Length: 445
Image (tube, rainbow, N blue to C red; front, side, top):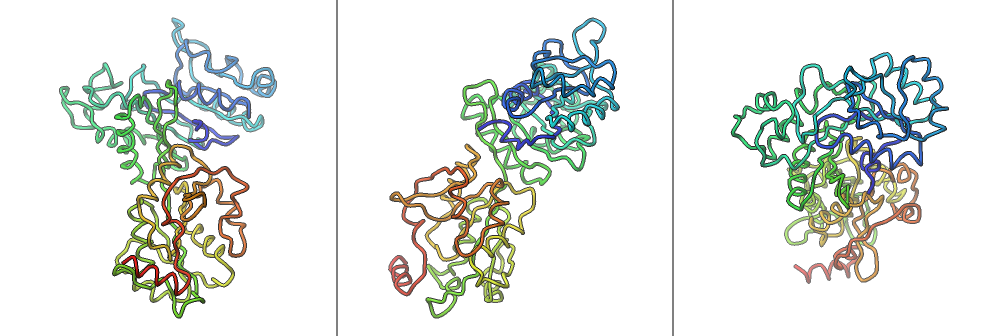
């Protein structure tokens, strides 16, 4: 998985990096990943160390904003360009760009179809920081902001050796000098409007990068922090990484929604199968409980003519029920209605059928884990060489899913997008479609 993919960077995008523990490393990696696909411009709104002049292929010192009109020419000679002002006295740092210069650079990048990467504060090489009053400096038109923390700070004291502006961090967290940094402290700082979310434009997407995951223990810390951050809709996803390691991007943790397709008329049975009891619960309730156990959020249940009955069966469950007025069009109509209920904070969706009572939450967790590790467009369970349900679809497939027609559901996308497989048992093949299936199901009770 590339960092650019985990951040879902597109061309003509401005990305600002704040925090501590890997801003320069992240920018350097993005330059390497993107410069063969699109021009990349790197700059700073504060100051940049003189040793960071190699962040891009060429370094352009801005003296006159009118010179930015030649940005296409500069990028023609090198696909990546560092833009700064002259050095501060003493020559240890490059000056950042002013507000007017940044605005001019933004326009030039748009005209050149370039990605603009901005280092928006400093951290003096530490793994955690609390910002001062004057930072970060994030342009209000920034598309994406990436707060960064180094996971290697966990278990360390809240001192200047590990934390930039340690006194301010202790003040925000209510800690003494003898305290050590825990997961909860990182979560608190990242959720604080005075720290991790400070001065971020309300229109910007926020994706967190937890760097320095050197060990499985560090990755476990990262997962725990990610789950807490994603309780806040301000964070779109959390990337767990070791940017200097052999496997730089380990996981991208994000919200995955659940869409339960329960609008079928059950023409081969005497009544709607969604309400048939199995082990004391309706089939549709089994699907909802699997979705809950799999950590899916939100959970949308698409129902048909039996809406009143479905609401009775699902009373008390934290789900959203929406009716498909034309289920006879095919499964694709329910699929698209469900998708329409997911907002932009959801990075993928698992589609479950309401007549598969053997599907459990642990399978959904496995699908999500494979997606976190690969960001594959589609993750499919297989048993005995045959694919089954449920299936996870990444957000990159949503536009194509919206075009699907008839009763095929998302299967028509399998030839258009890469897929990852998860091996499972025959539960992914058992559904209730006939009286014979009901008889088999009864034998399992």
